[in-house]
Image (tube, rainbow, N blue to C red; front, top):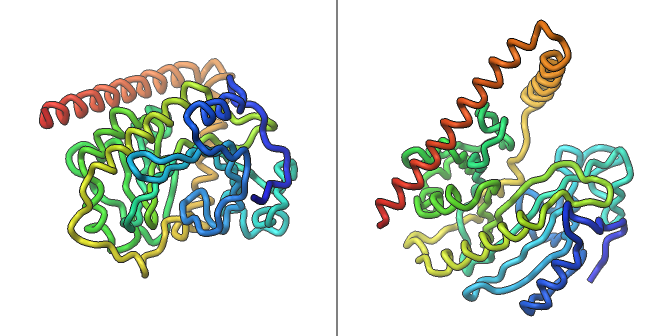
Amino acid sequence: MMQLNYQIPQQFSDFKPDYIANLAQQNNYPYIPSSLGDAAESSLYNNPKTNTAELYKLQFEIAGLKCEYYTADFTPMIYQNTPQGGIQGTNINPGDASTVRMQVQVFSIDLPYDIENLYVESRTNITFNNILGLKSVAFKDSDNVQLEGDFSYFFRAYVPKNEEINAFTILAPNLMLQLLADGGDYDFEFSGSKIYFYRTFGVVQSGIIPLKQSAYNHMLAFGIKSAQSLARASRPAKLTDTTNVPEMWQLYGLSNVKLAFTIGLIIASFFFLFACLTFPPFWPLGIVIIILFYTKYRRLLKKRERLVVEWHAKQG
């Protein structure tokens, strides 16, 4: 197997890769410390344009379904056309300032049939981004699916144009409920015959993967539980033909105008926050903003708790 041409991180936040290797040995899982992403992959974070490294990968079967669990170290697609960064074959160099590398934790499940292409952005993790109602991903030439009941408060579902109806064949309330109750920080994507669960981190840090052991174990358990549920679920009667349907990574991105506006908004927000922290006349305004944020945070928590209780009551 082809190896990567750069220094692989040897440390997670509070554990070492030996923990994963031992876990693999105890459970008789195939273990791959590092490899290049498969050119046949079609997920948002692992496709021919992101120069992906798959690190500390476990492979196993759950109820007959092939699963993989790994950290994806990749080049964001927005950089793939820059002269120095982006596509470099096996010559990945995270130390090069022109090449931005990102990390995401991935649990993938391979189904025995093709499924509808879609991406679901989870808002169940209560962050400033979600409190403000801002998007963490953006897609061109896509539609936003309105989910049943209050699930739209906690999930945004994106599909290629004119594919909204097909999305409802797999966005069942029980799957939404499982993500709401257990998923926390995870987005998920359906592509080809695979389902991907993601936990994003951000820019690569030197020699460290910013993932705690408790978070690693949680996603592993969640992925296994999800695979078991999917193996028990029956396939919708309508067969899926995705031959002419674009994959979500092909739709990823913003127009130049929206990108410029988004970057400008982020910069302005940092300056405003800095002003609130450093200039005493701005402190009352900062306190008001904190109170508003906390109030919205508590409302989201209560709404999430209520929705989980209501759906459990319906199923019980």
